Amino acid sequence: MANSKKTALYDSHLKLKAKMTDYYGWQLPVEFEGLSIEHEAVRNDAGIFDVSHMGEIEIKGENAKSFVQYLSTNDITKLKENQIIYTFFLYPNGGVVDDLLVYKFADDHYFLVVNASNLEKDYEWIKENKNDYNVEINNLSDKYSELAIQGPKAEKILQKLTDTDLSSIKFFYVDRNVKIHGKNAIVSRTGYTGEDGFEVYLENEDIEEVFEKLLEVGKEDGLKPAGLGSRDTLRFEANLPLYGNELSEDITPLEAGLGFFVKLDSDDFIGKDVLKKQKEEGLKRKIVGFEMIGKGIPRSGYEVLKDGEKIGFVTTGYHSPTLNKNIGKAMVDIANSKLDTEIEIQIRKRTAKAKVVSSKFYNKNTKK
Image 1 (tube, rainbow, N blue to C red):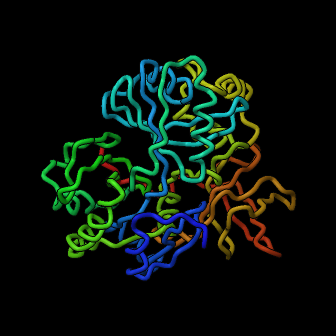
Image 2 (tube, helix red, strand yellow):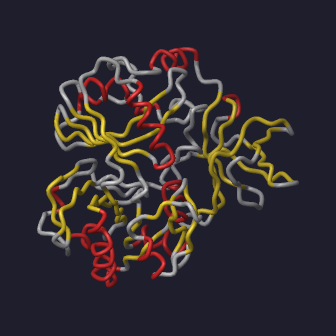
């Protein structure tokens, strides 16, 4: 961890006695009081995450709209000003460069929020594909720190520190002119937990004061600092993918069950022909949800078997704090992807029974 980057909240995390880890070159908290405690806080009250490691890339200029559309599987042209969309950037083979959020500030100004693990790759990919588009591309990641406050009481708590009516920020929209505890902030309403919540982008020098003030004013409402551990179990229960698990350069969005965010009838985008062909010919494999029948917790990379033959691999597996069950997602061949199909998970030197279930383990409670 000696060479890891530190967020502006590093010292705050140490004061709170967080268990730290290296996450794609960043020192970040895995947990504070414990994964289950933080998970339940977000489901029932609220949790606050340091997500300053996420990357921010700006694209602006005369051809910004058509350029972002060319890169994206989703239909950017339908975005209103200050609206946000979830999309993928693809390689020509249909594999995923990254999954990201595109914020539309104006027709000639877009703000992309990308995964920390892919930031440099994404930035280079965007520049490589600029071609003749008249755009300016800026990596703003060092400029911003970011908090995510998530949970049913998130709005109530954050509202204590701003005069902006947060109820006016609709789901998947952004307000770029918000004062949080007197500090200039960009505030959006998306989330990665299945609960209502906000992302607060601040100047690096302002985030520590805002973070500590939020913990202070949110204490009576059950707000807790939360780490990467609960962030992953929360997103997983809510059927939200993680790059490197459910998405990768070897997995297409269609195989991941995320075809809703791929608009094959819109303008051309990189990788479109491959996905169109994949859809026409039918998938040979897909990601499914499963529930353990036998004992054991499935983990990413474990083999999936049917009658002793390997049919796939686990992409994510956990004990679900909300459901109190051992659940997972796995890439399996299409013949074994139907609901209620019995499969086996290779857990170390033994196999444990499981069955295919809906991957919507938890019903999202996001604001409509």
